[in-house]
Length: 108
Image (cartoon, rainbow, N blue to C red):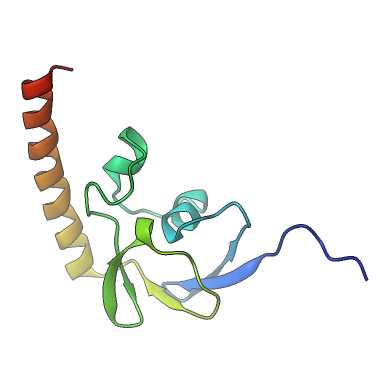
């Protein structure tokens, strides 16, 4: 029997099934690859995961950072929820304020 070098796992985000590719290390990778909307300025600017704390997602009733968890088959993830959206906005404001201060201190 030949086993393919990759495996497509199915994960549920907001009730919709998505494929997790073998190159997807975090849930945020799956979200970005499928062009779902989540705020993650550190993912774009610094590639230092967990820096901005804004990529919030609910995992089995617990809010976590999507950049810090691997996607797991059979898990139900919630991305689109009003309180999560509001918290993401607040985290982005905090990150931007901190980022602007750092630029002033150390130059651009």
